[in-house]
Length: 231
Image (cartoon, rainbow, N blue to C red; front, top):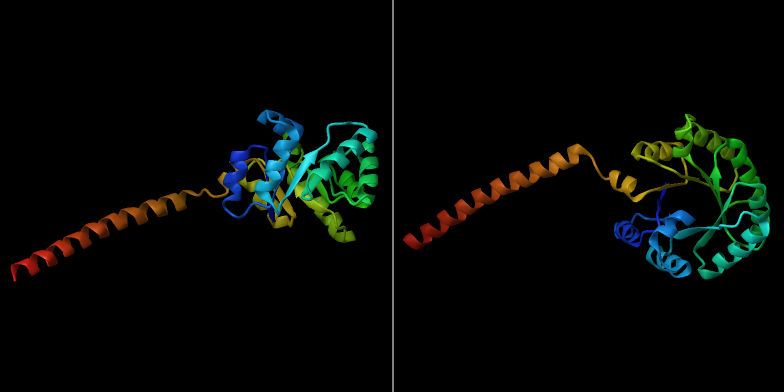
């Protein structure tokens, strides 16, 4: 599974990139707006931090013409940009045109296997089912992801499944077990993947043992030094 961060915060992105396991970024208008910087400048800086990873940039228009205009503009900024369009009829019309122009498209706000089937038939590069938001309305997000993956494997669709709205490590692990190509998550969830109480306890024990060993070694060295001086 590839790891994407769902953020536009440069410090979070730098921290994750420094670990060597970050494969890309998903952004949306809300995340970028929080950073209060010029949009194009900010996106290009993200592209430089994560290259050769991809950066998903979402259109804000809701009509096909607007999505086409924005999608072409975003794609021209950097070769690693993937354009996000919503799962609407206008979004699918924009997808159809942009794909024929060689622009990679991520269809976002997908909540059902039927929607995911349409997205794959239309030739999207990524499909983004939102697991956490499904859970919020008492629908099994992981179950929907499983159905989507089953359909895609049955027909050998090339669209990659980008499991989105991952709220905790269980979402990430279960999505990986099912074979989702990508998981995108907030930085706090990414950090949680590292944590385990036995790791913390084990490290604490190792350090305590090392301090005891240093004390013993120090006593041995002092005794040997004193012995040499007495000769």
